Amino acid sequence: MVITVATWNVLHRVHAENWYEDVATRWPDEGARIAAITARVAERTEQVIALQEVSGDQLAGLRLALPGRTFHALRYQRLPTPRRVPSSLLDGGEYLVVLTEEPSRELAAESFAQDPGKGALVVDAAGLVVIATHVTGDRRRATQLARLTELASTTIEHATVLLGDFNTDRGSVAAGLGDGFAVAESVPGGLPTRPRESGAKSQHIDHVAVRGAHITDLTVDDMGGVSDHNLVHAAVTM
Image 1 (cartoon, rainbow, N blue to C red):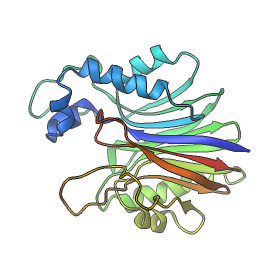
Image 2: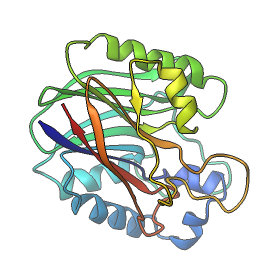
Image 3: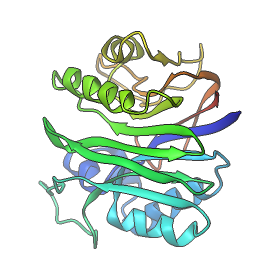
């Protein structure tokens, strides 16, 4: 069986404004950006899509545009707090989201103990266990990767795929998850998942990892600058 998957950090508006992201300048109207993101997600054909940094307004737009998809959403315990300008969002909460083409069921959802603004969402999608995640970009990452491994261990009889923004390079993710997981390698010459014009941080921080399955056809798609991340998609063979 082959299941197609994708992961994309769509960039919460408050984070964009707090951290002076160019996206906020290019898209001064958040409603227009939400509509553009929704349109890009709506045209995707992957059977499973994981999204990070989804605002409540963005989630509402996606639900309205995609009534045929099954939605799972984890609202983080921490609410993004505007530091520079007042937020224009009606629902400023931040969500981790999984959309599936077929009916699916949630198995677990939690904010990480070390960072209530990051976490994991576990879904059973046609026998494939999907763990969507957003991992903190500092030393707390080690404990969070260990927690992801623990969550996967509760479903050891099923193939598992991890999708998300890990805020670090492939090698660090592979080391943190351990030998039971395979983390897909970036395509040589392919697009970065998190483009940067400066700095030493990796530009490949969004990953697909599997246990009990194989990854093929990994590709990064340019999403037209509506987020600071590009979308990663692949096929998972069980």
